[in-house]
View 1 (spheres, one colour):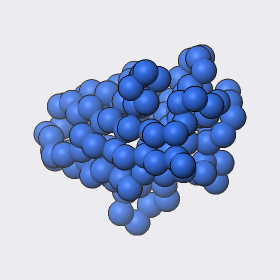
View 2 (cartoon, one colour; view 1 turned 90 degrees about the vertical axis):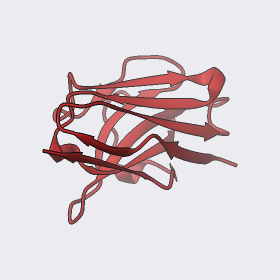
View 3 (cartoon, helix red, strand yellow; view 1 turned 135 degrees about the horizontal axis):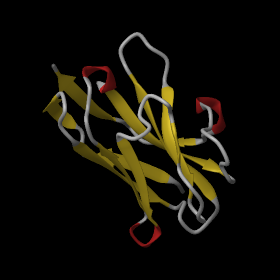
Length: 125
């Protein structure tokens, strides 16, 4: 049984930082691509970053490259997203997700099978 629970969202001013956490129960003993997505009101859900849980480099969306950092701790079954230099355009509900198999690129929404409930991030100008 795979369960994913996000935390760490909140409100911050532009230029600030937030760290999102995701506890991913049931995935760390198998090969999964672990990722973060976000969805702003009226917009489609978009991929932010992902990483293969057996090792390898993370992949980032162009819009967050250099500002966001993805980290994985298999011992804690946790995925993290450190968000720095936040901009109002980063405001959205952020979701963690898991897809069976490897990820040598940024995966699409449709490729993920397991999702968390989401956590709100609001960046004010």
